Image 1 (cartoon, rainbow, N blue to C red):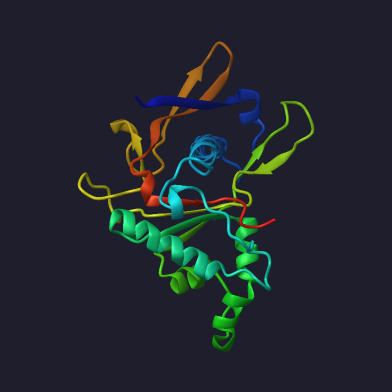
Image 2 (cartoon, helix red, strand yellow):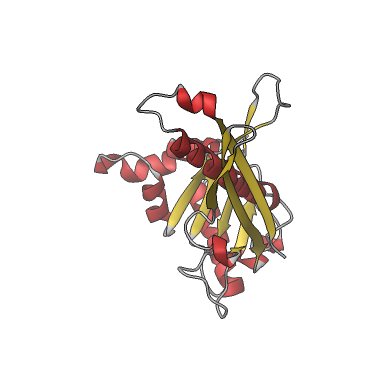
Length: 237
């Protein structure tokens, strides 16, 4: 069962009449509505999938915390930690993990980790997502940098990272299919399929003298095979 979500931005006539170029209220409202819906989807993922007790692809079928945390540059070995769990997933579903999702804090730690720096220092290159993905033989690394306001409306703005000290290693097929393993899919109603999975419409309320830019979506994020993912919990301090 897919759940529908919607959000709207009102544009009063008095604001429109006093708006000069290069500002475009319809465009800006559309961008804001789309961003809020996409943020809702990302919050859903970070809250319900990027956490412990969801994935069973790791060693022992449980979440994994490295013996030596990755910000312990003297003792830790994130390359071997990730490769080990990549092989473990392959042994369970027949496909090696190919995607690593982590937050900016973890990415910053890996960027400066001596084991990665050592492998590229003679190439005149910085340690980037692409470099780490190539060294680990992953298709891609996704760095989650979204933030969520945790304060009540009207109070001082307080922002918190959606992705903190953890990482998720998973297998994602090149395209969706019924007869292949996959960590998970996002299902959307037909009218919301493709692109950002958002439908935008413009409405008019003459009584209130406002235009309304509304965005709607209907989706569900589902774990397809929990063995296709390994959650690294608290990999840095």
